[in-house]
Image (cartoon, rainbow, N blue to C red; front, side, top):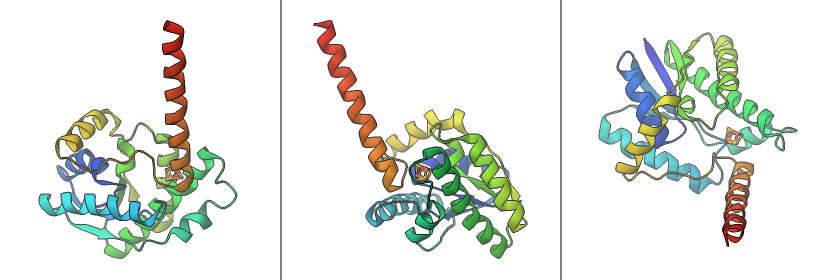
Length: 192
Ligand code: SF4
């Protein structure tokens, strides 16, 4: 089967690609208008492309149009669950349209390797947009391979981002790190 694999970044590509390529003819699709800012988009893309070139993996890149992400998330940007659903629909919808254009049979996504993503929301979004495009959605779950993906990406010296991608997620991740720092400081004080 010809599969167009939506990929969010290099580290997340490693394990899903290997698993799918063992059974299918896989092309990678970098479709991520959610990533902010442009320099970060390029850094993740270049990391993915460098690995793909080394491994002989075919990659197509869709145009970087961050305004599409802003339009897709209008009105739900402050509600992470809804914002991510809209973001999944956008990225997987772009990939599904590209799969149809290329004559691929199915779409899958590397997002399913991340324990930080909502697997049910991903599956719902993937199935809906693929039904519209007339291609199959492979609802994979690679979360059990996340530790190995982390190990391999570290070993390869890949760039590993510390936030999901959009501008709000960058601020949320920074706030989370600050909160954990503060909790550790309070715990140290309590221990004396
Ligand atoms: S947190 Fe990640 S999945 Fe959710 S909207 Fe932002 S970039 Fe998209």
